Structures are given as structure tokens and as C-alpha cells.
Amino acid sequence: MPAYAWTAAELAADRGWMFDLSDSVIAALEARLPALRDTPLDALTANDCTFPELEALGQAIRAQLEDGRGLALIRRLPVERWSEDDLARAYWLIGSQIGTGVSQSYKGDRLGHVRDIGEGGRYYTVGGALEMHMDPVDVVGLLCLKPAVSGGESRLCASTAVRDAIAADYPDVIPLLERGFHYTSRPQDRQAGAPAVTPHRVPVFGEIEGRPASFFLPIAVRNCELEGVQLSAAEKEALALVNTVAQRPELCFEMDLRPGEIQFLNNRLIFHGRADYEDAAAFAEKRHLLRLWLMMPDWPARPPDQDMHAHPDRAGGGIAAVPLR
Image 1: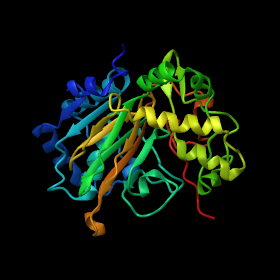
Image 2: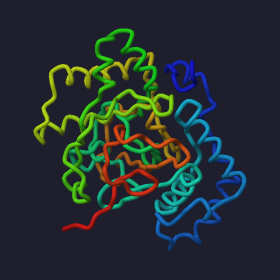
Image 3: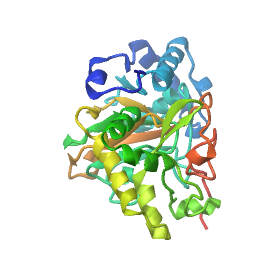
């Protein structure tokens, strides 16, 4: 079996996807950050902080994302002594050794704040448990700044293992999932000219140049009904089935991210979600992570029928920023 078709037990027994920042990498980043504080985040590139050990780390993470388990965990970013701005820049610089950072909304925001602010319609601005899904870019990163009081573990599973389980137990559903679903965009994102609903269906389970390539963002599928595209009973059942199978104990790995840890996931291979959690009462103490979206220019591009965005930011991905009207 390929490395990316893992079970929870297999991932737990493997440590090849875990990386600790060395003291020398931390010191090099710390020495470089003061000179970069006036540079806009999205203008920073790998060339702004390059040295052999950091480059080697980026190469190792890219290998895990593409040909390994499809995920990587970086530990030891010093959240206890760096400002949030310095942490964000260090995070961006590490990400720039892996891929190209892109915008996450029509506002052009490069880092998303994963925190419960009660804003519905997007997964990362509400609290509680999250269903399994994938983000619409090649790689998503999460940097933990503050954990929940309790709970909030990141839930991960290999999409190939989920497909195999569904094929074994519910073979009649596979053709529907391979046909896929129409997707909708947020009203603000349509200012760039994208249609309210994709004219094509995006397959949950597909291939790119002979390799598995999955995509699953159920909130954007269900919202199609608000635009007049009704889901059949079978389609609703299929959406629920993917989420249920993906959270089977033998497939789902729970990762309790601690402050200073960064998780990177290949969105073509890994479903992710979140366990329910108890949050702090004070806003400053609430569970808080920074989300980074990366495109991988060296990877084969998704074909048009596997893409839900008509107007990307750069490197073929992200959400184009548009002026407010």
C-alpha cells in the first residue's frame, strides 16, 4: 500500500512525519525577523530567509506531503517569547520553503485566524466540532497559538483509505462520489465574477496524472441549495457517509496541537476535521490557531473539473481579492 493510504494505527506508529525545529533554525529565524518587520507578509518569499538547514527542512516536509503520509508536524516554534507578529512571519517563512502562500478570502487575507467569533458560513470562525473536509488549495497549515481549555483535537484521515472502506462496505455509493457535487461560493467572493454555483461537478474521489486526488467541502455543497440547486436524498446520504466513514476509529487519527506546533496537510490526500471543545470565556484566552494556505507550483495542477474557484489569487490557487463596492 502507498504511504498515504494509512490507518490511524499505522500513522501513530510512524514518526517520519514529525519534525522538531533545531536550536540553530530557531536562532537563525530570530536573528532575521527584525529586518523583515516592515515587509508586507505576502511580499516575503523563501529568499528572505534562506539557509541550508531551513531549506533541508522544507524539502523534507514537501517529500512527506507529496510522497509520504500526506502530512507533517513541526514542533518547537517559541510562542512563549515571540510576538504574534513575529510568529506569523516565521510561520510564513517556513511555509515559503514549502510552497506559495495565497489569499484565503475576497479580503486578501494571507493568514486566517481560527477562532470562535460566531461568524457562520465558514468552518474556521465558529467553535465546536467540525465535520471532515478539505480546503480548496494544495496544502493547509495550522499553527497553534492557544489550545482549547479541553478538547479541540484535529481529526485526520487518509482519503484513499476512506474511499477503500466505502468501496468495500457501500460500493453503490462510489459512482455518485466519483461524479461529485456542484459547489457554491460566498456572496462576497462572487465580486470577482465567479458564478454562484460551479457549472461542473467536482468529484470527491478522482485522479491527477494517475495519482489519487480527492476534494470534499460539504458546507459549500449544501449551500448550493440556497442557490436553487437541490441535492437528492442519495446525495445527502453520500455526504453524510463520507463524514461518518472518515471518523471511524480505525481510520481517524486525532492530533492534539500544542502551542508552537504547526500542522501541514496535503488537501488532495487528507480529510481533516475537529473534535468538540471547551473554550475559555475571555476572548484573549480562546482557542486560537493561524491558518496558512499554500499552492505547490511543482505539483500537477488540478484539472478544471476538480477546482471550485474560477478566479484564483496566485500560483493557480487561493481566492482572488476584490475591492469592496
